[in-house]
Image (tube, rainbow, N blue to C red; front, side, top):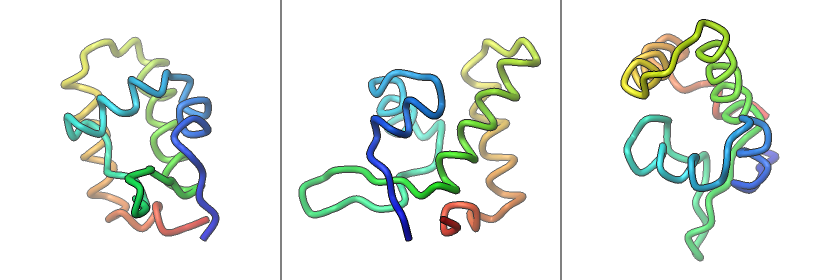
Length: 88
């Protein structure tokens, strides 16, 4: 599986690294695909595309409320059952 660092993920989602980190810590988005022994977070192509797509979808509908974004993310995550993360 091809994985990418948090900087690449943040760039793909159009957000800052600190935002991605805060979203993970607050369980707004799913945990990274892999965390290595040094604590670095790595993301599959599918994981990045999943979150970036939802960021764009939320933004295009005028969404601004973080709780609504979290609800959208987990509703979609349940629908795909997390399989998207395992796809490179």
